Image (cartoon, rainbow, N blue to C red):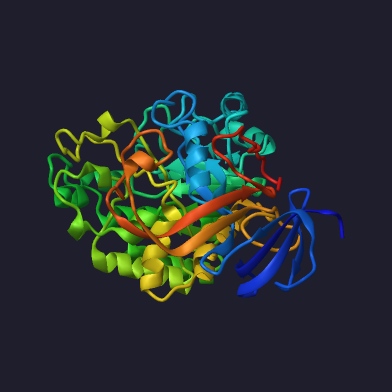
Length: 446
């Protein structure tokens, strides 16, 4: 065994064996020993944890809008990665929009990487974007190390990232299938949304009717059939409609290469509790009814939904239009990067789930989807990325204490169970007051 840099003595560790007592040895940023708690492992630093905390693998969030460069006043790599570290996240993958330029060719990817260089407190990777006119750029982006490609099936919210029509989606999937890349899809049908009620005013129920479940269901069906025809790998982003769960399960039984995520806000909030004018809750697809939320939880428990990631989509406070509370003009997106773990744990424990389940949803499955095979689990050879989590410690969310750039969150004032005591990246505790040590990842690394 090599000389150890750090040893963790933890009465509670989440590993493949469940929640167990273990002594963990770390050398050169990797886990090199997993022994019984009383094993005689020695290191320059020994971290003796108490029974009130659990050692988790660092979380992996594959759905984060950092927005830098171009809209850095909304968020940026420094603020986003500090928030991630404060929330127990050690790896995030940045979405190809709402930055300017969007990450849709290799030169734009290089601009994005330069923006992130030297100001990331956690490891950061990048998605590419699939547009109607960049089919020829996809292979180059893949070879440059993006983790896959994002597309929309309706207006993305920003004009520089146009959506794909169904025939364009099929062509893009044939292209990505030719080199084994993953396509991740914002699945709401443009034509169904165009024919739905127009959102305006303070009524949340009116906004909900403007983004019906049917639009989501129709788009997911289109993605499934296109994946079936092309043999492509596809992933459904931010599932909010529980109606789609049976067809997702059916597609998988048929061999369609399909994964699915949902987000903490769909598992935490309900449409019935959102006050009129509370535009901090606006997101697309929307937060739906309580019965729908419970079916999403069942989908997680059954394994139909693979993972839970943030869809952290912040903006400046003015764009949320809290002054007038108009859901028709407010920016749609929920800022939650720092809060995902306690938000999910708060609701999961009420339904009888364990921290082992939460780790599977928020660390292991996202890492596996992204091909980060040494992330998301505490195992021999894995990256020494850890979250020290106090599951029984409660806190009320105060937006003034969050690390993301703009003090707006749907979770403001909400009591959540569990707090992150510390976060470790490659065997070193992250100090957000110190220099950043996060790496810029390429597909196939780590």
